[in-house]
Amino acid sequence: MTIRAPKGTRDILPAETPAWQYVEEKYSSVCSRFCFQEIRVPTFEQTELFQRGVGDTTDIVQKEMYTFNDKGGRSMTLRPEGTAGVVRAYLENGLSSEPSPQKLYYILNNFRYEKMGKGRYREFNQMGCELFGSAESTADAEVISLLFLFFRELGLQEINLKINSIGCPKCRPAYLELLKDYFRPHLGDLCLNCQDRFERNPLRILDCKEDAENEIVKNAPLQIEHLCVECQEHFNKLCTELNNLGFEYEIDGHIVRGLDYYTRTVFEFVSNNVGTQGTICGGGRYDGLIEELGGQSTPAVGFALGVERLLMELKSQNVKLPSQAGPDIYIVSFPDTINQAAKICFDLRASNITAESNITARSFRAQMKYADRIGAKYIVVLGEDEIKSKSVDLKRMSDGTEIKLELTDLANYIREN
RNA sequence: GUGGAAUUAGCUCAGUUGGUUAGAGUGCCAGAUUGUGGCUCUGGAGGUCGUGGGUUCGAUUCCCAUAUUCCACCCCA
Image (cartoon, rainbow, N blue to C red; front, side, top):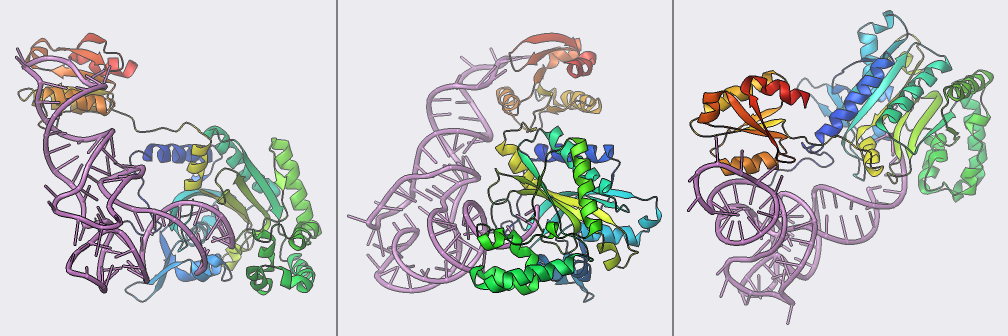
């Protein structure tokens, strides 16, 4: 084998796909009950969409995008996240003229050119929601409560919600000045990275893991302590609403998120079990993004949930997930009955039963072994006698018991047992 | 992007102080007298010892480079 999957990508094999299907179906189910509707958008977009949407100062745009020129010389980029494309589709297709708010959800893959690590891939999958057209904190509470229900139905424990407010264009500039004034005399005490961030994006210093124990960072002024009246009220209402819904959460003024478009509410669902990649889900409000991308000023709130990390977390908490299942029935046949077996097998499949018959040159004994190996729940042996009498002995593999059935009763019996 | 570890059969791993046809367990395929699986036994297939150079009479083994994976940072999902 010389050709291998590209770095940072991986195959999801049949042993795992049932768990993926389960999680995705559960997510769709919860979203539907919250009246979010699915949207599917292109895998690649014009590069400019992400430059403007995600933000030029972010790590994602600066060094992690899969960008290429197509044959027409246009710069295209494999999506590094879902929100920008969904916003583009919302504007392009006039969803802003549909009843508001618009509530959309998606399940899609993303691409970021990054150094590999546990729970971090260059192609990874996210499930997300975007809610367009409500500036009220009740909309924030709605997407957060969707996540709480989703996690609850999955049986996920020990996952903690952290929320923060990073203000709005009205109160953030004054705060950023305050923050810079605070850090300026202490620059030498910060890690090199943070010294660089000081000019570019001082907010991110608060989120630095390296300096997390640094007293300077710990004691830094936080945006949440310097919100304007409107932002403060918005945040207070959100807390009240979360309390009302009975959700536990922690206010963490150090959460800032890595994407430029957030305003006011930001939140993360964090696990302690996944190691350093503990953020399973991140989101927040982005009231300026739609206007930034050429639409009318429209408030919005959303989140993205990492499927790989969610599955890791479920596994580490020993949550039971579906695994490969064998067929309901395997039909053992002989060379002179193989055609009749194929016909019976087809009819069973048409009756919604998972069935398999012999499609190899295997001996009787080998067919029995195979049926056992793949976990068939029942087998029948179809020989000349069975065809003549139109009846079979249905054998339950778990305990070897057999019962005699008319061929015509096979589907019903299996369905009911 | 930084630091560390690893890479031998589909999987989990031995091994060679450098020396003929590189091993085990497991899995896969087949068989153990004619139509009943799991246990057991027997046989078979499957490896350019991650890739490329170098040293050497000879390299899977030593050296260099490179790729990939994992761990810790960075960042994020």
